[in-house]
Length: 156
Image 1 (cartoon, rainbow, N blue to C red):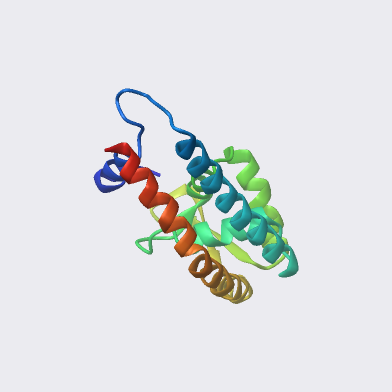
Image 2: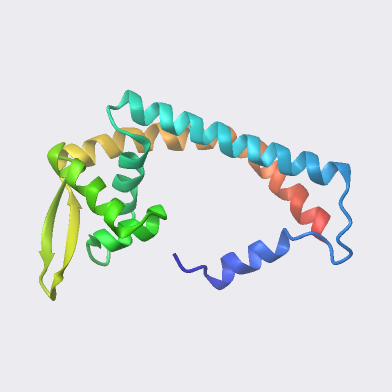
């Protein structure tokens, strides 16, 4: 994905000071941030498995649905979104077709491209997982907000 100017600006605001000095509180904030990320990822992986999906299948469903709405996602788009190689994405799509989570179709404007879309079953699985993920993010928001505020404060 391409980083927007706004995202780049946010990233710049959390960089350490120009002096490069690190305080104990900087390390503590980074450790807490990584802990929060790992906690959320562990929750996400367990939720996907309870829903009968691998974590990568869940991520692929989300990538396909969240691609942007302007057009269907291609296998290559999914590969880029998941940070995997194209041939790995092809194998993932093959397994997801067999599970009836997605369908493939040729791109009407470029038959060399394969587009992927969620089936009703894929939509249902993603919807139920997304609800619980949003709830989990809501619960983690106060801690994450506090950590992110500390990064901005320290960068100035």
